Length: 280
Image (tube, rainbow, N blue to C red; front, side, top):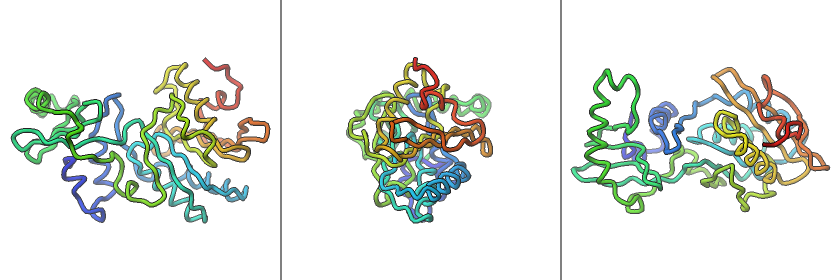
């Protein structure tokens, strides 16, 4: 896997999806999630969504993509929309987007979240994960990682002193008409209310991530971000490369979300959006 210095210093035309996957897949965030997104994972869902939008003659001027992780699938959705003639402004959100690359003693570096959580140590050009896999105890990497954490951890200064980096694919960070913002879907964001013609929540709104109370808050917040009657919402979860379960909704004139189509078994939180399940 590359170090953060190597990744963010690499020319854009030399950053492949495989190279991105190796880098982001090694980053474990402070809330124990990974910044990994597989290329092409959402292609079938994107195609179905664009088909429904085209059939309805809907114009998408503002798109909100929630929980983008590395942003790979955001680019793929935008490209699918553009091929159909849609050129929306994109607001892409995730709990963690902004980080700092911090210089440490002895020529080392650390990639650090704003709260101080270390995502990666760079020891003389070698990437060291702060977290452990079972295999690390066999290969000896656990001992090396523990030593790096013990020696370098106390040396990590205030992350404000570091170089800012965006923890998304540089291909997305440099796209026109794209805004990247950090956001917690369980907290209402006034800047997003009533703005969007299309919202996608992919691999975000599932009961594994959120308590019943937080899920209720998240669902209520997402609903308020829709522009008004005719706006679209896609909530989907992918369990593996070919096992998708999601629901496409559309907001009616009486402010209800109706199901337009289901993929697989549909979204596991569909009933919360339609009001058929009592909120927590």
